[in-house]
Image (cartoon, rainbow, N blue to C red; front, side, top):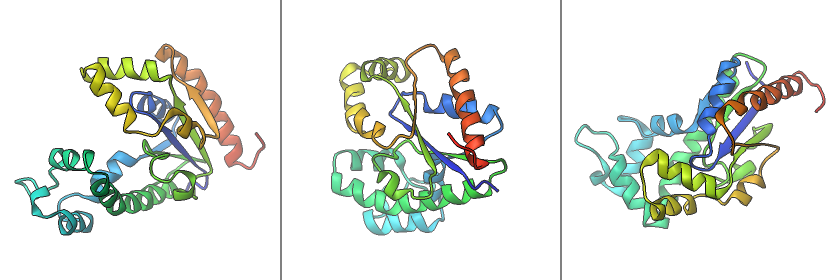
Length: 206
């Protein structure tokens, strides 16, 4: 059982997944908000039934699951619809992440929450002991997104603008990894944080 929980967040193309993989290599269990969100609206779930009640059966795919592409298009242009969908999914995601982290082996666990700042920050996740932000300059984020997803500059900019700002994410941070260099530099940074988190979980000082 893990009694110490670290939230990891960062903007799109910041390298969050790479950072959490490094923690996993050190034996730390990671609960992923994206996976929890999929579980929250999986076929046959109460979450999906609530989505259908809110948006109609046209949000279902032929196999009875959520038509994610259609749902994304709908909420991307309609802030009220997006807020309605988030009100259905986010509480379920938070509860699932907390349960997974509490049940994890090891002195601490990680909750990977890409939209932590957008989803209410620390107030929405009072059970997080610390928040680690994977930070990257917007220009680097923009270039990585274009290269990774094969999108043009305008779409990359829109994707970044749809999220919290860099400053908003840093405002919720206890710890920061600036991931603007070669990937091989991440290992030592994660290793240092792992040692700090193990000490904190054991009741040690910073």
